[in-house]
Amino acid sequence: MAAPRPPVPLSLAKPVEGIPASAALPGGCVYEPKWDGFRVAVHVDEQGAGIWSRAGKDLTARFPDLAEAAAEQIPPGYILDGEAVVWAGERLDFAALQSRMSAGRRTLPALARQAPASLAVFDMLALAGTDIRELPLHVRRELMVELAADWEPPLNLSPATMDRDEAAAWFSNLASAGIEGLVVKGAGQTYTGDRQWLKVRHRHPVDVVCAAVLGSVHRPSVLVLGLPSGSRLRIVAGPYRSSRAPPGSPAGSWNPPTQTIHGPRRSALESWTGSRAGPIRYASPG
Image 1 (cartoon, rainbow, N blue to C red):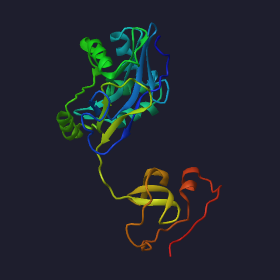
Image 2 (cartoon, rainbow, N blue to C red):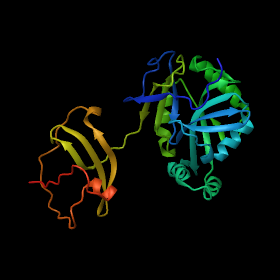
Image 3 (cartoon, rainbow, N blue to C red):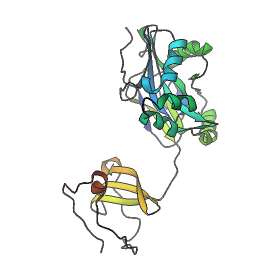
Image 4 (cartoon, rainbow, N blue to C red):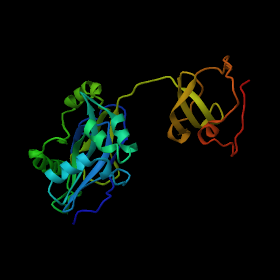
């Protein structure tokens, strides 16, 4: 079958607690680092290389360094799946990636020079113009290793292991470099383009403030969570719907706040939009 045209649906991972056992997925588990970057597919043809996001957006203009390297080092007819990352010393710098997405045409070249991107490749979807997604992962991996033998930075082959103990060491030791955790795949799995893999992420508990709630206190339907930042509240999560988590109950009894906040009442929606239009109801505790 001929190689698919972009954009191609990319496989995703569903979260699990703890590192899965070696036999948890078909063909045995393949453990890989979970990179803190932008998921991308690299399509190479006779005209050059294109960089596409997981959502199907053409990001080639945002990653000219990766597109140029891919066009020089990868033959036409190949499609690779990987993660675009930026290193700041020995740690990943996700903020530098975000800067690329918001940079204008005039400032983008300077950003690319100051913080060049790297590509961590972990899968191959097409080879020499042929769709190979129906091949099992261990075969695709072998083909990818052969292709990557002569690569030079910024192209890199993402490491992988079938040794759970080695994966556990990665999980513990690579966190300081900004690695988010592990992605776990089945060596016998074909590439389906859906949520077929597993992921284990580092968790860092933090106390947050409930900035907004819809529904009852005992069974809220929607939550918006924030962290205090000086005199402001920085929204860090939400809207978080109860359908994504089991019903809960308040951690303790409700005590009205003693701090008085001076200024006109404004809803979060009004603060964001500058408009009071909509079914907004203001309420006070007590």
